[in-house]
Image 1 (tube, one colour):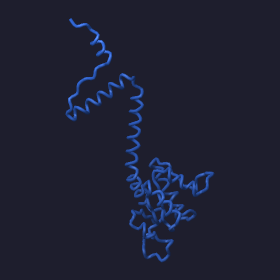
Image 2 (spheres, helix red, strand yellow):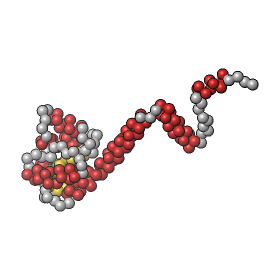
Image 3 (cartoon, helix red, strand yellow):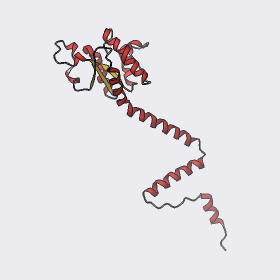
Image 4 (cartoon, one colour):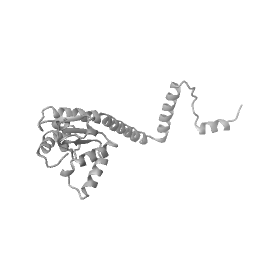
Length: 194
C-alpha cells in the first residue's frame, strides 16, 4: 500500500491488521518490520515466503503494482482500493486503478472506517486460505502417520504394508495368496518325507 497516506494508514491500523490478526495470521508490513537487508531485497524475500498478499491499489503506487504482480506468480493476491479509485471518471492517473487490474475482484473501501470492509476482506482471505489450510492439515496428518509408522517394529511395518496391499488388490478383484516366511519354506524342505 501507499505508505505515509493518512487514509491508508488508518485503513491498515483499524481494518486490515485487526481482521488478519483475528484470523490468526502472521501479518507482515515491511515498513514496520526491522531488517538489515536492502528494502527491495527484503520485500522480495517476504513475498517469496508468504502464503498470500494484500495489495491496496490506492494512489496507484508503481511499487505496489510490481510487488503484487511478482507475488501473483505463485500465491493469491487480495486487491483493495479506495472506492473513488475504481471510477474511470478520475482525471488523475494516481487516483485511479490501472485498467489492467480493473477486471480483478477489488475490495473497495470508503472511508477507512467503512463498516463492511472488514467482513468483505475476511471473506476474500478465507476464500484463498481454505485450500491452503486443508493442504496444511493434510500434510500434518501425513507427518503424524509417518511418525507412527516409523515407530513400529520392522515386522509390524511389513504386516501393515501387506494388509494395505491385500486390501487394495482385493478391491481391484485380484486374487491374493499369502506370502511365506523364508525360514518356514526352508524348514519344510529339510523335513524328511515318510
